[in-house]
Image 1: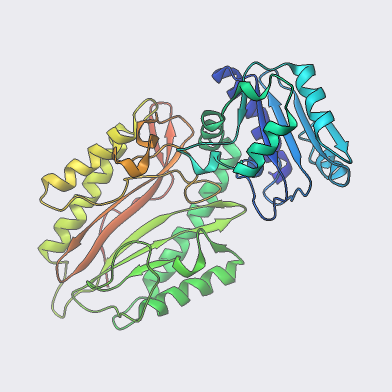
Image 2: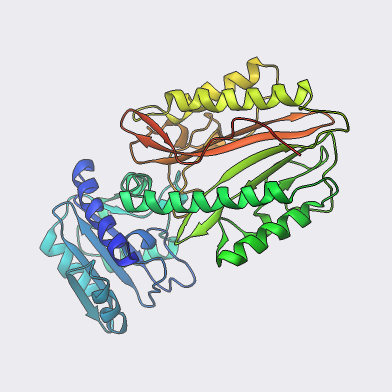
Length: 398
């Protein structure tokens, strides 16, 4: 499916969401998007098109799709096919914007600001004040609400085509992990493993799912701090674990997976009890989250199901959420499978929806051995989940 067809799919989906949420009109107001790219543009216009002058993209619950853009951007927007009505202007966007709003007379106007969701917070403060000034003397600025609920649903509910693209990224990631498995041996530096994975990406002409300096994350030693650190000079050693967090960007959609290895000591035929226990607990916690991950569940409930398994087994509580959305970006959506901590705002209280793609991820530290962690990608269905990644069920030994 082309990007053009994908955009058409999403703007049609947006109309249905506006009707569901009883929001009359959704307004995305931007300028100079090469400097500040509103995340919603990737959904309803294009991941790559850049708007220069003030531009307004209007979607309504009745299905109208109207774009108001500078004269020199008009033909580009017409060619997307997503907006049947494209209005060009020269000196000011105000006359056309006011005329369209007068014609539609929306009582509820959603605009892109949010305290909870960065993907719904594309309207800068400067653009906010300009929008109020442009609508001075009209009743419309008094009708603004946050578009966060609309954007959360549109980003989170993956269409069939979006799911297929994520699946393709996951398959490639698993293929590369398979090549890593054959490459591994004691004595490799973390950066050696990283460079091997970069070469596999180059062979496929692909990029990483997040910033390349930190993808993959490679934890090859007990002294390697888990988290978002860059690979270093630490080496794989017998008696230690190896954890890799990695994803690819393929056709504009990404994956996010973690896989685990253990380097056998001389004479060992299986991992020692402390490492094996950690792996089992991590997997059981992920399965506990998966069991209740279904439409209507709250994010914190899913997190608690996993977190309680880890804590009851005697491990410290991990200091991050159990899962996040995956799609066009590696954190792609509003809701979070996380604890009700202040730093997460309201996102753990949001309901899981069918069509969401989440990671399920967590880990524990094993003293003198290293970090043990897993991460899988799953699709929420009407009555449960589909595992999009093939789950790692055994600790891989080198």
